[in-house]
Length: 116
Image (cartoon, rainbow, N blue to C red; front, side, top):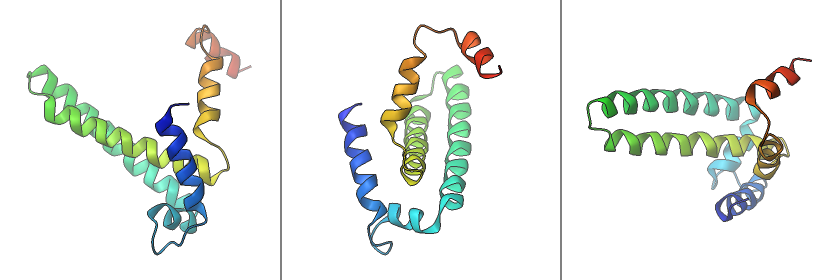
């Protein structure tokens, strides 16, 4: 796992026990899984919109601002997804391990295996 993911995983674990008055992550944990999932939904929507805006701007050769917005929204989505994993006593390393298992396997084959 990258250093940033390791650091973020450690911080998210620490913040689970932090005071909700002083930590945004602690506030999310205190509000529970539904609030965390709501934030993921919000960030996913914002990421989709940013991607659409980027693609439109790229066609017009004016995509730098939209690219920055897309990266920022994706970072928000990943961050809130990591909070969800932490809340569920999972972490990014487990997701990376799952992705590693899929290397060398066709996406079509992998998806078909899930349906069996």
